[in-house]
Image (cartoon, rainbow, N blue to C red; front, top):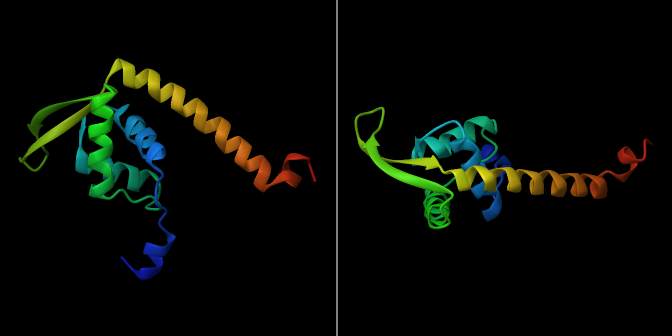
Length: 119
């Protein structure tokens, strides 16, 4: 990865990472590395999830009972932990998505007031 690409990547706030993990798991159980890759891929490589952020977030979500974990075998035949969204996690995802939408709208109104006023 070039230095320019590294500068263009955006670091995630803790709550945002939790939301993105929950959203990624909505598709079904996935191992940790695949969660990070899915977030990177779906953001067109703008968002990069480092292991030092991902695994503490996964542990935090398990503790809150928003996700569960099971041992399994990855696509390259290695032992891996697979993370799965729980019913509580689905409810939390809906709540957090609603909060995110409100916050993003509020920030947009501040950053681009003329667009909101039709100018």
